[in-house]
Image (cartoon, rainbow, N blue to C red):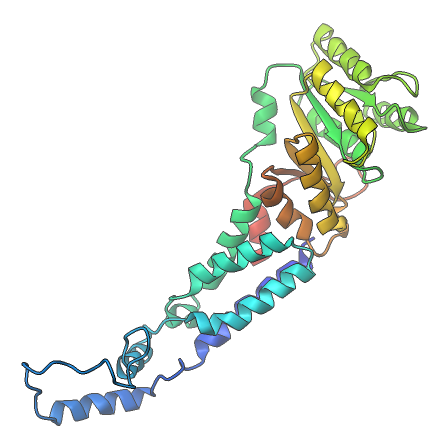
Length: 357
């Protein structure tokens, strides 16, 4: 995952470093600056009472720095990277981010933060190998993906038991398989888990989740197809309370946020059960579609976090970069394969390290 995005960020870093290697516009060569200083030493001293007449001097740039002063700064390694020099690399980066399925507002936020951090950076810092550009990229990326502040493991450990977690999302994105993976994840960490099949809409849903439950040796609560999803999950919570089970993982029918009847089911589950956490699942490979759906679900029925499936097949990484900032809710896990253990905790700092290494 992120191979394409990493390549694009690497190109931006190279472009900025190339700009730092180029002589600053209008800057005079070092020997010219030194010669100018020598000539100045031989010239008669100016009358201290005379006012400097810089206002109309063409040798003064709009920022008020004379070209001679800028030449001296360049020669001493203190010359700064200008906004004009960054314009083209930043424009190319924004286009590359959009091409990589990063949502437009998120791409612009990344570009603007990089502009703020890099304009005015000493060119010598970049040229001598200091990791100025890499750090700026890391800071910008961390700002957009480290959102929500939830540590899933800490939340589970601290919460009164049983804790009820409901999964929602569109059909066919791997939601049920993710529930099974999370069931094993929690079981491996010493928690007792019960599964609840609130997807009473889809034919074969009971059998699919039962197969996972049998494989993982987990209890499944289910009703007949066409039953009331809220009643299924309520029964699972009752079972958990009676048997000292720590976590209830509830599946729901895949739906679009515009499906009024199915969204009404979520509202009823919320009223009857009052889940402690609602997790939205979607495919990483869906890119901006996944980002837009996450926002729509969050607007329609508030979510607490996101799991992105099929992340191992996503070379772009646009959804993973965009969803947290767009929804204000954290990405909790990445599905990285077909096995039950192929569930990776989403650690923003680790993700940034991958992108900038």
